[in-house]
Amino acid sequence: MEKEFTTISIPTSLYKKIEEKIKNSEITSVSSYITKVLRESLSKEEETQQPLSKEDEKKVKERLKALGYID
Amino acid sequence: MDKKFLVIGLDCAPAEIVFDRREELPVLRELIENGLYGNLRSSDPPITIPAWMVMCTGKDSGRLGLYGFRHRKDYSYRDIWIATSQSIKEKTVWDLIGEKGGRSCLVSVPPTYPPPSVHGNLISCFITPGNEKEYTYPPELKQEIEERFGPYIFDVVFRTDEKDMLLEQIYEMTAKRFDVMNYLIRQKAWDFFMFVEIGVDRIQHAFWKYMDSDHHLYIKGNKYEDAILDYYKDLDKKIGELLSNIDKNTAVLVVSDHGAKRMKGAFCINEWLIEQGDLVVKKKPQSPVSLDEVEIDWSRSRAWGWGGYYARLFLNIEGREIQGIIPPEDYERERDALAEKLLTVKGPEGEEWKTCILKPQEYFEETRGDYPDLMVYFDDLFWRSAGTLGHKTKYLLENDTGPDDAVHAQDGIYILYDPQIPRKKRKDAHILDIAPTILHAMGIPVPDDLGGKVITGES
Image 1: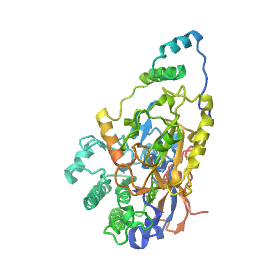
Image 2: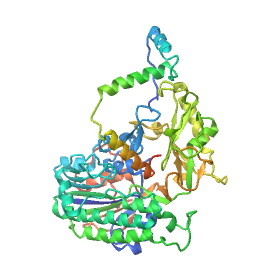
Image 3: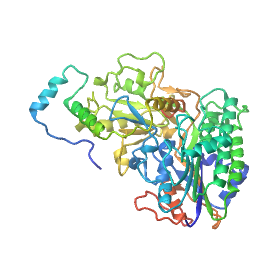
Image 4: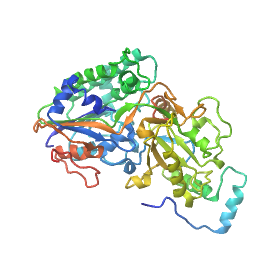
């Protein structure tokens, strides 16, 4: 079974910069910030056509709520 | 193809009705008396999505990366994505049949919206947003169907107290679906024909308490005591009519994705987490609301849960969640501690619960997609999970979002009938066995990476 988390190294100077940046934000750790930025960057690259428009997604979510599959 | 194959999918059909009441269902009884039949262990989780696709691909939920209808988007607290046909990245039996030149006809197998291209014909399923959408493959099939039968009916809204109206709607939906299928089965060339009748699931959820004397809300002699069985009798006749279109070179499989049983109640998982100090809200709601509408203090919360027919638990991990607080090196320990606490949860009268907890990464050989940290079946699924907050109690004896009296059971059913090899044998199987069985019967090589085995009469 693969480990759930792995460690990477970044320059301390960059770490300190991020620490300063997130000081008064809701983000609780440098790790969380980095993960968020990387995910967003990868998402942009992987952008594929959405199977459901925003409006359709809302409709389907409401229906699934009414069916008890989600709350 | 060595043989043609017809799959009669009855969503949520349990052995308690299909096998135990077969004296009242002559068509199904005939198949049982001349076929292999038994319990069919469902997927984990035993929910319509992903169960039908676990069945049709022969790959489990972990491999499919599907753990229900909704999934977290990028470890967001609130953003989700809904499973659609485009979420299925593994080959289905009809893909494999198509590769060998076989044609398929598919009706409302979840999830098949947006309608994927198939070698044959397809009508999508109940997650179709509306009839104005393109819901068939090929696209022209929609007009062909609507000209003859009017707008296709994908589903009903069963969580209503207007029971008579609901019954009418369920019968109308099923009647139309069978009219459409009788047309397709006669008019279209096919080697593989499969449909899923969702009416079975809907009528059971809506009427279980009227039928099951063990249900805590059952009232003897009530008006709807026979509603479910009457529907099955009607369905049995319709199945008979559909079967009159097939020849002796067609094998038949009646199958369900999971079973059904009485709902004892809904356990408010997030109310419990607040009590445990694991979930911290900025302002406690005074009336029931979705978790999405509550202001959570994520910087002090360790876990939260999702409701549904089973519970998903998520941990708030530093570096994974944007306001995560549990250090990643503590992930396993925290998860184990939470699981241990969950196993101590008892019923409202102090009753012991047979709760089952799965860790996806350990349970599945491979865990793809957006899996939860814990999958929880409270009291063997007798208690569904309510993620909503603002209740005065952790235990709801009725559902939190509308009348629903049944939950899912882990065993569905199958009946495998080959007119050229009639035999009667009871043999329990697993949902992963279905795909290999279909392929083998049709003379198509079974890929090595399918999880199950061909169901045979041998012990």
